[in-house]
Image (tube, rainbow, N blue to C red; front, side, top):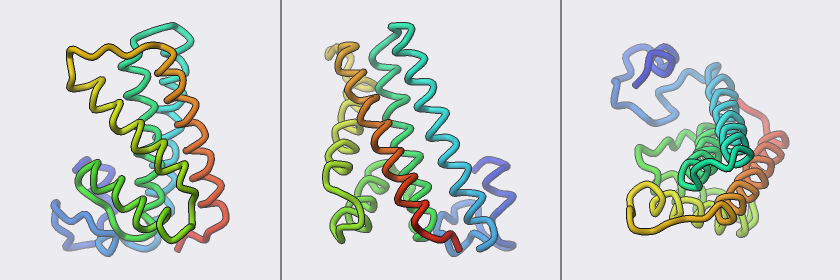
Length: 157
C-alpha cells in the first residue's frame, strides 16, 4: 500500500485491510476524488497516445484503467474494495448493474475493455488495431462520464 493510502486508514488498520470500514469516513470523499482524478488522467493519456498514433496496446491499457479507476471510486462509497480486477468488475455488476442503478451497456463496455486489456498485455501473438483502440477509448470516455454523473447524484458520506 502506498504512503497516500496508508495515511488515510483508520488507526490500527492493517496494511492488508482493504474494506471501506478501515477508512475514516471523512476520507471517503478524498479517495473518491483521487480515483476520479486517476480515471481522467488515464483517459487523457489514452487520447494523447491515440492522437500520436502510438501503440494500440498502450491506448487500450490506459482506457481500461480509466474505467477501472472509475469503478474503484464508485466502490469506495460502498466499502467494498477488491484486491483484484475481476473482483472490481464483478462488484460493479452485482452492486450497480444488476439492481438497475447503472445500464447494462456500461457493464458490456467494461467487460470488453477488461478482456482486450488482458489480450493486449498478455497475449503476445494477438495484434490489436488503432481502430479497436479508438473504439475502446470512446467506450471508456462514455463509461467514466456515466460514473461521474451517477456519483454526482449521490452524497458521499
